[in-house]
Length: 109
Length: 113
View: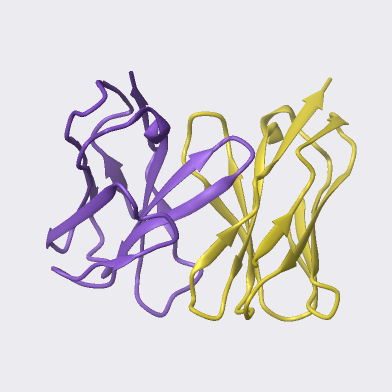
């Protein structure tokens, strides 16, 4: 079966760094996405990785290792507005998105 | 900016009712999707459509149907609502061939009583 695992909840302090991990087992792989979703709102696109390595976009970076079936999202200089759920999703061999359950990130002052 | 609009943010319906959830996008995207989102489960694909009058079953189509009469509108239909269909429903669209281009609506939280 297809499976994507990520922690249910994480807590971090404003100004700090947090790493949210995602491991996956899917039928085929055509890329991995990270989305941010604030409570009651639509998911919004953060990153897309299809090759191994680290991609940096401002305070957010995303890493992929295809051989390990592993990705992480790194958030630096945390701000209160980063409190949200972070969703990991893999594009499978049929080009459909398979989603993890999401990680709720709580930022404390 | 691409906009995906879902007609209702909150809906309360009775068991056995026929329910219509509407989704409209304004960027001429061919591809449209309906997901449901439940705590601890992530998003699950119900139906998708790659063109007008075309529809494909996703992972959990039972109890649902869809309609795509116009390119910009993709409707999800619950033929006879049941309490286990209480959920958040999310519509998304994207242009063909652009895997990064998913845009989601704000969701409809449906409660079936």
